[in-house]
Length: 220
Image (cartoon, rainbow, N blue to C red; front, top):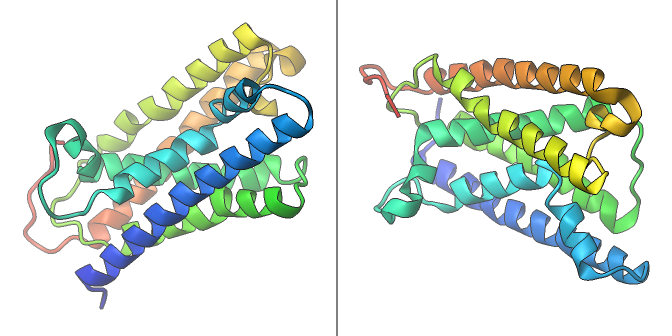
């Protein structure tokens, strides 16, 4: 495919900027909403730290902020690994699909919130996928990576359930134990993780299509 490294780097930078701006914009809206409703700023931060979308957009922002080439400090160099980028891309695709098919019909934002939702749920995932498609993948990722990537949504869902039990508020209706009960919430959670696994194999397959011949296996 006739994509250059410079084109991939431009897309990477654009995705990083869009992701950071989207997260900042959403936080600003939540803080404004809390203020308008006479609530403390802590209420906005509690809401902000509940969503898989926010964590995943931050994840994408971080991995796309690091340049593909060059030396990074060891404490953050792991974010530049192809395996970590693949995990982040898989997660943001899940964000887009879950929002479109599970939440879009029950959530109708307007004005600035609609813009934030479009950025976080469509623009960033589309940009991340575009970057992954046009980026060069000189080292093939093993097929064992997608199951390992599932630890990310698994940890989030565990966090969301514990958090919900403590504050009695759940970020998404499909894991709202107060409404649907634990058995259905757990079933829904594992269904999402299975969907994430399938997306992971799709993302890995794309990386192999863009791999030059002769690469060696990556054990990262």
